[in-house]
Amino acid sequence: MSFIRRAIAAGFAALIGLPAATAATIEFRPELGAYLDSLQEIYLPYPPADQSENDFDGPSGTLKNITVSGVIEKGDADKLESLMASAGYPGVRIVFNSPGGNFLEGIKMGEMLQYNLSSQDPSLAGVYVLKGQSCLSACALAFSLAAATRDVGAYNYDSRFIEDGAELGFHMGALPEDQAAQTANVKTIMNLTYSVVAVYTKLIKGNINPPLLLEKALAHREADSFFYLRGAQRSLSMGFTPVSRSILSAPVYSYAMDMRTVDAVCRTLIMSTRLPKTLVTYSYLFINGDGPTGREISLDEMIELRGSRTIAGFMASGESCYVAQRPDKTVLISVADSSQKRDCKGTKADEFNNQAWCATDREPAGLITIGLLADSLMCNSGELQTKFVTWESDFSTGYDDDPFDDLSNWQRTIVTDVNMRRSPSLKAEVVTGLPAGAEVKVAGCQLVDDGQGVWYRIRHSTGSGWISARFATEFNAEMRPFTGP
Image 1 (tube, rainbow, N blue to C red):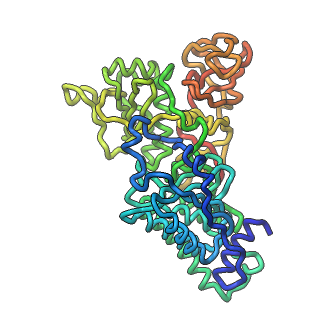
Image 2: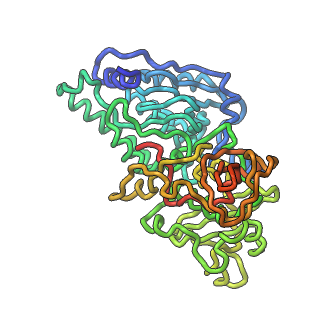
Image 3: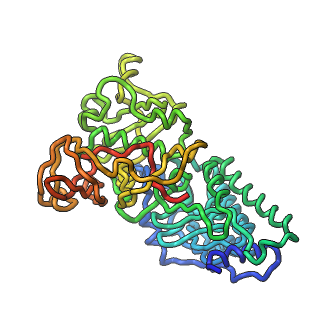
């Protein structure tokens, strides 16, 4: 029996009175402080100049760090609560690394953490799953419940952080194989199932996580079968906060950024965040209006044309995208659903109604990061994607969510004259110049903190080399990388 299966079996054993496995290790780990301090949000982090206005509204000072590792068993919730109480001011951060265990104890642990966060003086600053570690089954429920409903939203503070490369795994669990045929405890097992579903319902009702999380968990009913989130775009769409210590969190600059790329980032963000979506969203998610659509000019040119450092784009499906260029050339972004009317400024109320992008005073909330740009260009976490599904498969029935290859086989067209370089750097030797309209084959990608952010390794009839990914046609925005069923 695998370690995961033994862990799940132990959870059911504890529930129905069989011998229990060794309880989790719950202890202070002060050496984790510097590591946790270095983690940054990958998507929509607040600009550094505004950070003081958006910090966690809770304890300040040197937080203590607690780890919960190993199989979760009865009594572990009380043990964790006692250790948190002993930490005193200013509070704690908790790192989970567990294969699961007793579902009811995991639920109890999560509800204790949620109560702490919802109190007048919360001492919990956040829960984490770190790169290379896992939080599965009962652990995932405890982790997910550690959120205060009043704080969670599309761009508001969330207390649940998944580092890129970690694993958060959800399922409904199963009896150990040697107990599966027994019927004496059916009522007990059914009650457990109802309790687990009630947790998912609570997360949905509180607008903490989307209904899709329950649907995905229900599809995994074996002890070693999980719906995994690994800290990137998919985790964001499920309502968690992906973080990283890498350049994924570094800001993107507007140098050589055309509005075609801005459009792609807007669409990716709308699809990735939990804005309300309908079939219209999937069918008409493109910038709508007359005048320059943005695909022919740069962000710098559009800002000059509109006479405003902040501009608003309106999707045919009703969503809006707000983009601003800061003095240091970093780029801010926010998206809004169709219930929020796009606010264009001008002397005439109807002056901008038919323009694809208009001037606005509405300040976007977060920075475009290399991670967000990479997702838009299908170089997720620095890896060129080769398997895809439609975003619509998440929200509509009748769509096949089996993965398929990029239908264009990563053939791309150069949109603006560009230098192909020996390596992914603006300082690298120029191999040759490629004119607009040249056809290339993308063979790989790399993330570089150089102002461009994402580079494609390409092959052309004149040779091979690297170009900034901003100069090649983008991937179909209706698709997302396949990350597992």
